[in-house]
Length: 262
Image: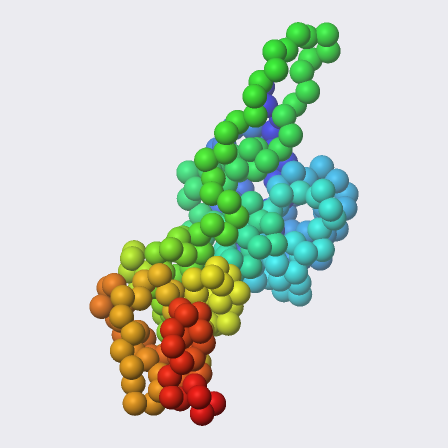
């Protein structure tokens, strides 16, 4: 029989806490060890001990959920965020959250998140004097961390392989990521995307564009000294004059007249 997971519910809304408590009561091997209405209360309850998991809201009075998570002791409880705000998912996972569940929380989704917690817990020691055959560790089917880029959208978190991204562009203060799966608006800035994507393929070719060279099928020269890059999906991306020089060096092309005058 499995040891029950001791779960602390942290949300400043009474109805949200009641819903989570009701869902947890219907799950096997789970017990509610307390409730908290803000980040300070979470930290105080964790210091008392006996907490395996915190179901943590993002927006609470005082400390935010992310702030409270950052102050949890090393080796402390696992954190599952339960929130209506999808835009903080990337930050949450970067800080070690086990899962990120969007409200309204459903029973099956919550149970899946708790099973992920169990998968991270060390196996229980065998009974004394029992002979146990060695069991090989399970083969992980998960991709390495950040093998896919998580893009928060209104429909949830979209996971995209960097190889599937052709480019990203800034229009009217909003960044759109163009992929084989579709085009997605994101809260990432172009600088943040450049930091997260492999530098050997992605190049900042314009102050308003990030380009994956592996998707480029043609570079058309412009009178400005730049290029118009054509992608395999038929998109056009402007390459600035300075970036065109860099691309020519990268591709080992002969210098143009504009390079000589630079």
